[in-house]
Amino acid sequence: MNILVTGAQGQLGHALRRVSADSSNEWYFSDVLAGDDVVKLDMTDRDGVEAFVLEKDIKVIINCAAYTNVEKAEDDEEFAYKLNAEGPAVLAAAAVRNDALLIHVSTDYVFDGKGCIPYREDMPAAPVSAYGRTKLAGEEAIAASGCRYMIFRTAWLYYDEGKNFVEKMLELTASRPAVKVVFDQVGTPTYALDLAELLCHIVEENLYSVSGIWHYSNEGVCSWYDFAREISSMAGHLCDVLPCRTEEFPTKAARPHYSVLDKTKVKHDFGVEIPHWKDSLTVYMMNKS
Ligand SMILES: NC(=O)c1ccc[n+]([C@@H]2O[C@H](COP(=O)([O-])OP(=O)(O)OC[C@H]3O[C@@H](n4cnc5c(N)ncnc54)[C@H](OP(=O)(O)O)[C@@H]3O)[C@@H](O)[C@H]2O)c1
Image (cartoon, rainbow, N blue to C red; front, side, top):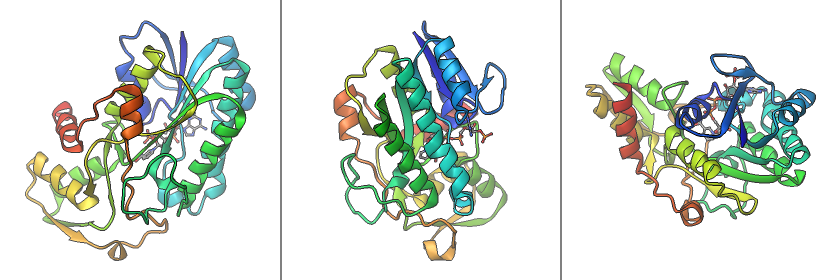
């Protein structure tokens, strides 16, 4: 079976390249720019995507490509929409043409974060940021396309390759005596390798049965402050990590205050055991050293 991964130079894309290394299937990795073992394919290029999917007889597309800069999206919603909504629509149309399955990755930011119990897949989405709106539009475009699809909403993703909160905190807590981190935004981190393993397992074992949405993050709940403390402590940094409120760090994009995802469905449907975020962070730190 032939599989196409888009956004292969990003965090999740890199993690998928790693976990699929021993697969007997044929994996093609693509991104908007070519790289080592990565072919150039702009997911918004309708003709290019369709030609690639038909020529290589792609049967599964895993879309890791996206516009992920939440702050910049506020000033650049049109371009974010092109990547996060029109791009997935192009992939979905190509999937329909070749009867392929589209596995797409979305976000906890489709919710407004005003809840206080973990978000299930069937709860109403109400994004409060441009990024969240464009990602929700991507989900809707896929669902309307008629393709076979699986959408995985994830949160607070990190991996060695890429700019992410863990890398930022490692840098700050190594170089400063103290850092303030918000404690009134609560969610769950996700080590990209854990999600990549699940996606690879689904593809390798052919576990698709019906189109739908699933939530996936690591287990547990924490604030960005708790997360930062753990990162600093695991790294052995002596930095004082201090809690502060969101108002102390005004940002253009509104962030959900509570964005914990309920993972009952993914655990039930695929029989996965999800690691706790602290255990995955430990693995990540060990993999780095
Ligand atoms: N990061 C998070 O905290 C987080 C949280 C929740 C959900 N997610 C979702 O998880 C998925 C993976 O996120 P990630 O952190 O791995 O993203 P990422 O590191 O930002 O990677 C995205 C990749 O897509 C590429 N790309 C951009 N435009 C493209 C185009 N037109 N055609 C093909 N590729 C294109 C990017 O290239 P350039 O870098 O050159 O633009 C980049 O290599 C995304 O759908 C994201 O929305 C992420």
